[in-house]
Image (tube, rainbow, N blue to C red; front, side, top):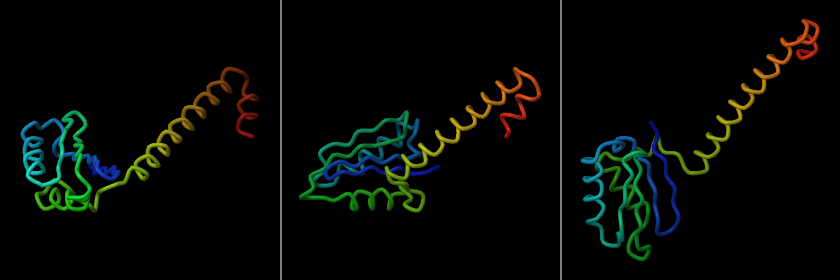
Amino acid sequence: MSFYIHHIPGRLRVKIPMIQGDEKAVGKVQALLQHFEGIRSVSANTLTGSIVVNYDTSALCSEQILAALKANGYFDESRAVSSDEYIQATVSKVGREVSKAFFGWAVGKAFEGSGLSFLAVLI
């Protein structure tokens, strides 16, 4: 269970696994954040467990929002990944799966022919 963060000034998206599928928890997070001066909007997606906070950068910064989430048990920075880390992990996973599929295809093709074909693939 990790916490995903994507931030550009004025917009913060945080994936909070504990709100996934929990409308009550989403309501609590929204209520918590809407009390901050400078928060323009807080939207949530219970399917993915993420929130998007739009805020006024002259009144508030992303660190303050994350600190409020952390103080209320909604965010664990030790398990947080940035958008770059998330993309890198996803690309790596896709690469492994494509490699497995290709290897499976090559082995299948080798077995279609003779045993000699199989040795040729391995060499």
